[in-house]
Image 1 (cartoon, rainbow, N blue to C red):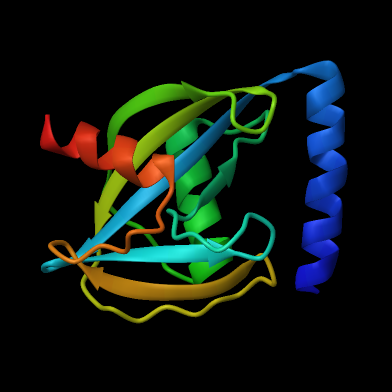
Image 2: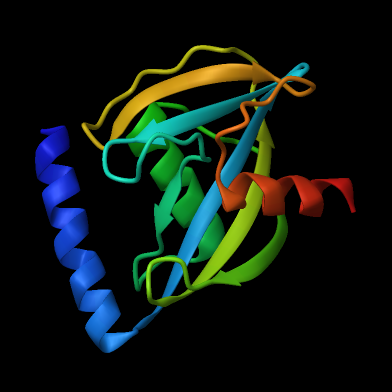
Length: 144
């Protein structure tokens, strides 16, 4: 199933390269004590990033981040806090990324989609070197 996500993602990137659409996405930094939960997706290389995804037309960004985290990790977020947003053009589109933070009361999660190939808790003072821009930007928002 992971190879299907990778194939479809390549098709999306071709579309984005040609048409350069504007999109809205969400990312969520999930914290537990002194750790953050990061994921690797099946389609975007071998780096650690935050759970999240696209905002549906009928959703606000907070509802979208709650849905995306549940779909990817089986975690029901209760108290999410908006941190800020930035624009990314990494995938050839104008993508407004809305960043959120949520604490959880347990480290339990279940990878529920083939979209996520790995998820792992990292100590705040020992984050992986191979991480995404989304993690850097979200941490900057959290510190301010």
